[in-house]
Amino acid sequence: MRTSFRSTAALKLRDRDAIITSMGIIFRVYGYLHPPEGYVCDVEYAPSNIFQSAIPKAFRRGVSDKTYYKFFEDEGLRFIRQKYPQYQVFHEPLQKKIVGVKKNQIKETRKPERKLQKLVKQTPADELHEALLDVLKLVTSATGLKTENFGVFGSLLHGFYHPRFSDLDFVVYGKPQLKKLREYLSEAYESANSPLKNEFEKPNVLEGKKWRFHNYSPQEFLWHQRRKLIYGVYHDAKSGRVIKVEFEPVKEWNEIRDEYSTLRKITRLGWAKALVRVTDDAEAAFMPAVYTVETLKLSTSNSARVENVQRVVSYVEEFRLQAFQDETVYVEGNLEKVETDNDVFHQITLTRCPNYYEQTMKLARL
Image (cartoon, rainbow, N blue to C red; front, side):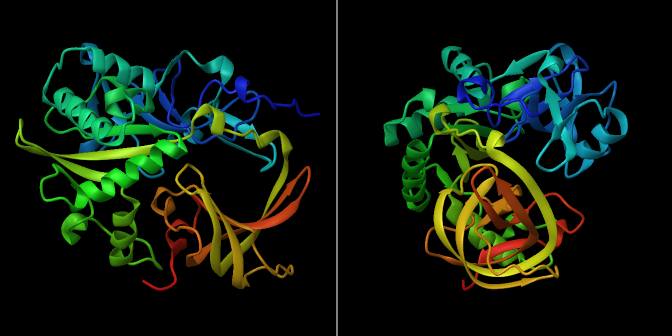
């Protein structure tokens, strides 16, 4: 019998919080749907004594000159499964192990909001630290939001950023706060006097990058990314540098609902192609992004009779904030049957899988 996990108070960690194990491996808590014994995670960094990457941008130098390497694409997944399979948790509804950390394996945790508060109170140590404070002041002054509504993740959270090359990676907590932030960024990106601009404003942002998606063109990608507004660049007059700025949406504690205890089974049925209308986008900004939809057309590779899908769920960052209420979108992905305590329905899921680059979600007409 499964142990119930019904209290959100028991969920001490949330999306973007960091877990460090005794091996020094740094994991990022992924989303809000976790089994009782631990947390579903992405593996982000590992110390150089156990992992080294051939990718130049993977290198990180930490405190006391300790070096780390960042994982890209499916590197982390393969690393865990091949070398450290103990860092997996059993997902009962899926009936399989996925990357994660059990509670008794946690040596240390790092929280984005706490790290930011420390950085705010300190005298700027370098030009990136100073730029971080400048951007935070700019945003909070314009929106009325507080520093407590934000955090930092990535190399800033872990203290191995490079002052001249690292980006500014913020977390913004809460749906109302995200709404205010996006409204401000929409105006700022259009203002000639604003030092903040849309990262995807210029089409050459993809130059030199190999495009792999089969059903999603670079032009479609750029169009969708621009309107998400959470990706920007900051023209820092003090350092003369253009710094990438990202605002990752994370739920406030009172917005988190435990669904794991009521989820019974998820069954993969095959592949689906669908034309759907978004009827609810309230969860579209978070990971995973969830879109409640009305099915307009549906084609499946499965012999089972499925007439409609109720949700599109994306664990793929490319398709977060991809569509908004009342928009019609084309979707290709994994067809799943979901059984809960109170309902049975079908959904299309976009996730890391063998057909990763065949997946898509885009407006039916641009």
